[in-house]
Image (cartoon, rainbow, N blue to C red; front, side, top):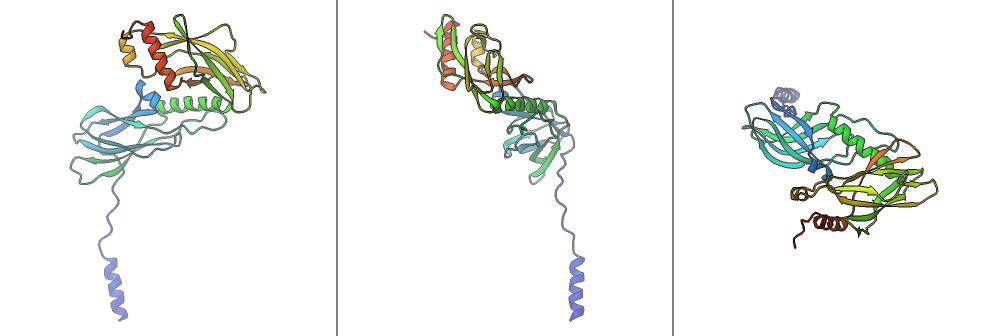
Amino acid sequence: MVLLVFAGLASGCGGPAPAPPPSEDPPPGLSVSFGQWRSDEPVHRMQVAVRNTGATPVYFADVQIVTPSFTTLPPQKAGIDIPRTDRMDIPTPYGQAVCPSQGLPAVQPATVVAHLRAGSEPELRRVVFKVPHPDPLLARLVRDECAEHLIKQAAEISFDPEWKRVGEAMRGTLTLTRRGAGAVAVHSIGGTTHYIATPVGEHSPLLALGAQERVARAPVELTPGRCDPHAFAEAKKAFQFPVRASVDGGEERVVIVAPAKPEQDRLIDYALEVCGLKPS
């Protein structure tokens, strides 16, 4: 009986080995990089740019951007066949930058994880693309977001909801409201693709909060920067105003400030009227 048990064990050990897991390496000739169009910036999205130099078309079921520099979002549905091509973009949202409380972090390595099927493969498989490091787009995005984060820890910069027509301009108020410690200064406000922003009066800096002050306000005027109909049809970044600010006399950082949606609608109506484009 003991001999039979050993024989059974020996027979089991001699059976076929389990199949290895599918390779996570990309198919030959397939690579990815990152890109971003102007319309992607306001919605926190980038393009996973796929290059396929092989003869086999590849089906992408989903894509996911993975890097310690940004919070990881769930895989984003793609559902796209990519033939031989120098570039085909897959629009992909990305998470918020992971920012320390002090200083600007260095960008971390990134991968793109995708479930895909190459040619006649029967099933989807998980593939991991290594993005060349450091990626210049990721480096810029993490720098910009974390620079903004440093300012926002100390104070909130916003537009008040009230806008008033004064001649050919719309006048509003830029407000600086304390959140944390430190002396905060707003040095300038820049225009957008559609509006010129001009401080009203002489201010240097434009706004300042001493260590014990809670709120500071300054009037600003907006005028149309362009009046062609095409501009209004493509107003992707019309209200993304860059404001330069600093804490405790440190380096100036850029914070993007936008009016609330109802005020944006009023400003569009105003610009259409000033430009002579509003229907009668």
